[in-house]
Length: 124
Image (cartoon, rainbow, N blue to C red; front, side, top):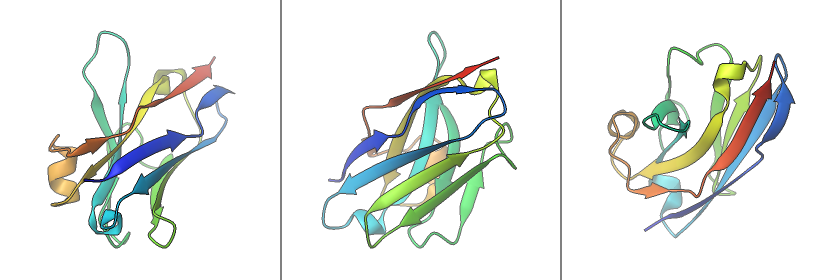
């Protein structure tokens, strides 16, 4: 089983940027599809982005396409979410996620491991 720990959240003005990081521990962490979800109070957790084990295939929610970029460094067992041109509606707790099957399954909610979440707040 892989364990995940996010960092990099914070407060930023609209139009600004943040980079979230996720450290994965476990012998086979580099074999997992990895992704990011976000959640605001009273709403369901929603898919943001996913990347396959090699880093060559990426998937994005329409709401973040063109603004967010997911990447991974398997040598360091790290996954990143670069968030540019942030909007107030991006405010949420962001969760790192992992699944041993595929990013397609992951973005449909088949998640085997979650991080503890990191708060991102975008002020208008």
